[in-house]
Length: 266
Image (cartoon, rainbow, N blue to C red):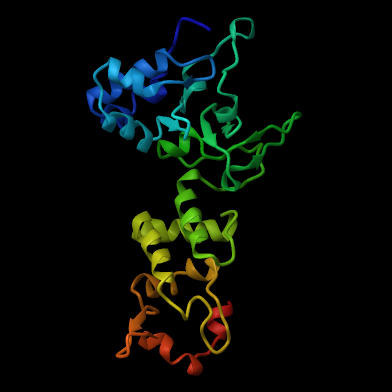
């Protein structure tokens, strides 16, 4: 394993990094110094204790996307290959092969968890699979290389996919094209937390889950449309407690028989 480690100003000279507490920045440097040649750290909690860091420092590094943690306790430095280039004759592959298999490498070298959302095929001779969630996107720049098959999808949308799939409706596997454009518009307008809350509201609506005179069930494409989303967010379809302890649907959904369902199927 190489004994020297480098740090790129493209990462550590950003406001995102410098706004973190000094103890968090220090922990990042120590984790990076002790990472293997692929950027994996086998014992981040041990290193955190060595430098008198706190659990919050690890949480901040995770939430700010400077490290990617795994259930095994191992973590990886997300921008490792932006910081370091190790020549092949000095390179020793990580022992964390299972964790490495869960990652893809973005065009600029940053790691990302591999999901349906982050798969993208680049038009190169070797057709390497890379993710779209690049450093430019993380630092606020929205740029896509001309040599890619364009799939606008970031891991930042993964919480939305995961939350939707807890509803046991039609499974959401990817977000791209018009679907991505509409979702990004809702997130920009309302914020990610409100989008997740609106999805939670669906759990409490029999109408949206198919208990109506047409057996119509909400779809993700319907949900993210600008005229539909605020109604779900504002609980217009919420089940209400009945006098006998049961539930009844809210005013908008209780008159389902009178609905023009054509506006739901579009």
